[in-house]
Image (tube, helix red, strand yellow):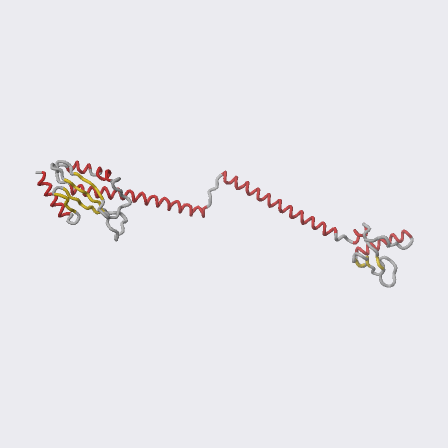
Length: 262
């Protein structure tokens, strides 16, 4: 009874998988299972799993002996690893075996194994894509942060304010130094440009030469103060002439210009 059912099932499978099935012996064979991978390039070679089936004498009243391998010289799937994933794939069809006990079940097992392998590969592809999306989101967030700037917190504001105040104080100190240096230079320049009156009052006026017309007075006839380059028609020189004239009148004679040198 069991052997007849095995032969009959084998013939049905041969009609379904004419190019994918190959006999190993009278009671064993292997079937190549093409896997549909999401996003797979149409020109790429289709990945396959190989399911090896061996009938026990009492099959289908007992489960067939199964093994999973990759085809020889076929490209490996980075999302699927054998033998690491083999226990998971085989256990994923245990329930199907239990439900199909007592009847031909290999075609059902092939379909269940194909679905389980594709589901496992899909989950791992999704994990890879999720990681890529996460990295892309981080990169986009970092790029957007360049335009939005750093969020202001109480701590960051206090740190910024302290730095800003220090900078303002430094600039103010530099400005005061520049102003003081400017004032110092201005004072020195003003000291070198005393007025005629200041020169006279400080006794710095030099010898005064006579003017035109043979006059002998210190400021008569538009005379000049020698050694200082001041002309007698200068307002302050006239003022000094007035003072000298007053002095001369007090003394009852001419005021002497000798001894008044720079």
